[in-house]
Image 1 (cartoon, rainbow, N blue to C red):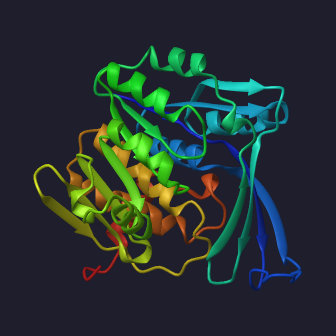
Image 2 (cartoon, one colour):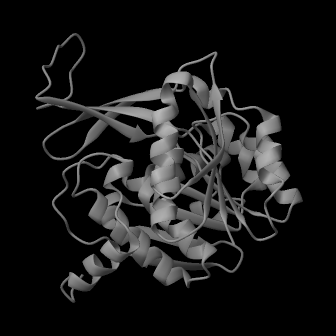
Length: 297
């Protein structure tokens, strides 16, 4: 099977700061670097490094060809990444504090200029039971989901950055909804239901340093896996790493418990490294990391 990812591609600019600026405050950065990012690109890299065949569907500006080449070098098929000359590549400004936490501002750029025709062409190769990943940093999500369902594909919707109207539009098409604990609570409140009564077959809730919970909402089953304790350097992209690894595990037919364990381990290992896509660990690194943990973890 294979994963198709309709996802954002960004240039990430990282600024190391002692603290994030308050209103009206100017803060001098101690360092500045850039690299490949975007929720979509991060998830594609994570899934590829977890061992799945990944086809990325997206768009960059003329100055963003380097990002496409980098995705390709990381094992992602980029046949369906368009070069859009009428707009700039998306980018993100990421402020990282000494404890590894961050604040992020994104500009979508060409991530919001993806043509329906390009999505249709990309998915024409997909087979039943292949997976389509979608996030909220591009356009064409509903169109892609409808095409995917018509082909018998599994649709995984990572509802971030969180937007209630986008979630409402996508829920009818999603086989798996992935959110963090805050977003899950917001969505349940907005719909007037308990988290475990959300209208999707499967729900995946990430809880940061606490771990993650998978819910089979049709059967009423849940499974929780705690996160290993690590010293975070940069938490940027941890959720994307988790999502990519979890979906890759399911794509490869692994048991849910193993999918969760690998995804939690990959995210924990990622946050010990600075950066985004280039900091996502390989499957062999994740397995070695998990094997090295004390039995209590």
